[in-house]
Length: 381
Image (cartoon, rainbow, N blue to C red; front, side):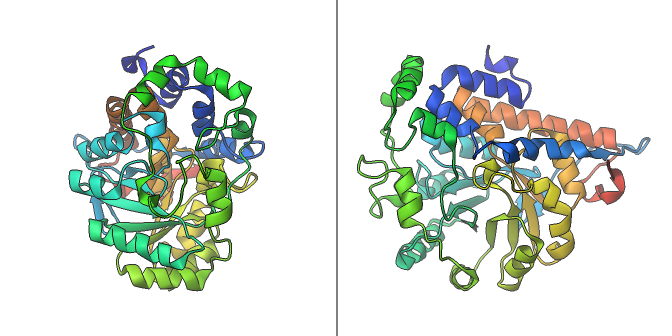
């Protein structure tokens, strides 16, 4: 199977599965507990139907949108995700270059494997910095100041991960950073020697956003320890309000699921919220973001920009979310599997397919710009 044989999300997933050691594939593909929420994230889009209009004159289609003050050529962006150079040696460099080629936003995680400064210098496209709230308040302030000095436009605080989710696939293989694999995990790596050659003949793995603050990745600390020892479960609205004031620019919360929380985010000065259940990787049994979208837009959509991620694999998913009031839609696994399969060409092919789907679907819907989408072109089953 070649990259040119990939025409949708499942094709990229299959190609990545052939390339990646099983523990790494399961880290991307897996979710919490019984993975019920993970399954619901994608299935939720099937409960709403699109109503197309005809004879509207749709030769030209404008897919541009503005979210949190950032103009994007596409209504989708590459959500910040951790450990990208573990999946492919290019990591964030491939994602940032592909996002810039398509004129859209990308994110760098505090668990990212390329420095946010390097990414900001290389690419003009809007960049968000996703970070976690640490027990060390000084570290939180230092991370925000570093992002500000680098020229990052948007700060994105993840609020649904004050402790790690129960990801049982990782437990079965012993996956962790640094690697502490059991026999099943070791066998998974042994079956993919090409990945190992690629990984160990390129730049050593590191987590530059956390250098000087933790020993994560150096052999003396693990991701599990990072979540349980460094992140602060006592984080509250007052803490976040202080950070919003300190940042002084577009600030959004990622992981909002309740309408009242979106309202509170607007009250403390947030410019956006991302409705997200972390791709089903945190609280299994929680609602899907698409199921919650309408409630949250009705509650706070006139006060801040509402975004959504988790489960998006098709252009029609994006159009349904935009029709309910989302300003943009985040992609996660949708670009991570192409990244793992082929690096930058993989991410660019995935974004290209999404763009083509969006243009085709907009024409079939009888729409020439995103502001023409609305609740009137949807029906709930």
